[in-house]
Image 1 (tube, rainbow, N blue to C red):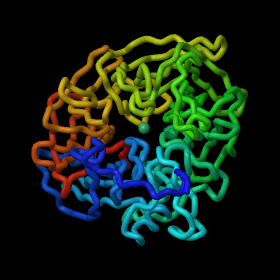
Image 2: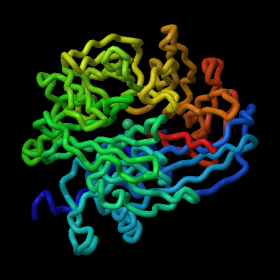
Image 3: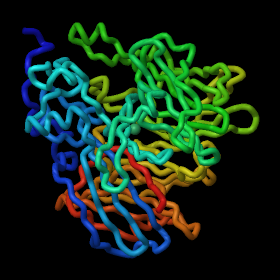
Image 4: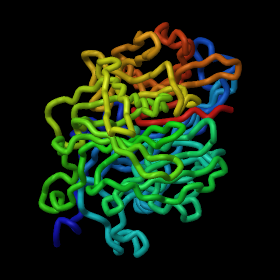
Length: 468
Ligand SMILES: [Fe+2]
């Protein structure tokens, strides 16, 4: 018997900070109408906020690495201008269905090499990897999709969030999408990349507003090692894909090392991939790490402006002991020269940058992020404040409370031209969860409405506002 076929030991939730406290999994699935509202919900704000995140159905075995590991749970808060309704559901992948039949975890975390064999899960699933569509949720082309990290998403029934199937767009996009595809609000097309451990290491695709691919999977030339890439941006001309030096090294993993190696001497590069299929242009600079972009746009002089949250290294993913630091950065990318010029827009550790999604690929004014005060641990995924930056004035404002844990801020456009920001918030003192609604122009005044959710929603990852 080898390390590959020995059943891994259970992970004790008490030993992993991402399995307890605000991260403790929520196993209940409920549908609850007429939620308690404190304050005043805008009558013109109608639609649904959906949010995805890791949420283990059973206590894990082998290992558990937040934020990559985990079963997926999607939460939905519907606002109708009067009140609010909530529903949540697991994304039932084939592995999760098998685990529910067994009543326990069968697949380990991603840092553990074991895979269950046919005697445990049958021939169809034997030695397979577990799907992890727990990062984001988007609606596109009539499909509601729970997204994984460069893998096929799972389609959900928009009525009840029931899992329908793995989505490959009729087989045209078999290897899947990034968790952060971008939809051009002008054309309705969705653009995505996908990275792979085997050449070609990076590909891209486009899917029309009707859900039919308009660009088949296309290789990106100029990348000769497999790298992890989490997010992208989009302009009217380019896909903007950051290639930071976080390299997959299978050889290291087979000899007991980490499969992800941080190699800063490689520097960082940005791929500018013309949407019309012309050859890719590369810009390069010294190494940095990027989880998330805020937005990008064509500047009009041939350069591309990219705003993003920059980290000095990828932190927990590479087992780094020293804490990583982040800033909001603007990079000006020149496809003609390959030059990349970076300017710090704001400091203060932050993550989850979001804009008004109607401005994707166009100049934007406001960027919202989560942040931390002295007592919280944003690097560990726990934020205790929200920040909003006005890039026209350079001003930044904050609203927070050390007792609260904030999720990603999402922009909420209302029917009358007003706009708001929303976030799922958990009160550490009593473990209640809420949906907070902030005024878009005066978010620092605090929430104008709080919707009490019927049970605790674990701290999670990304979501989307679907106008009603
Ligand atoms: Fe992300």
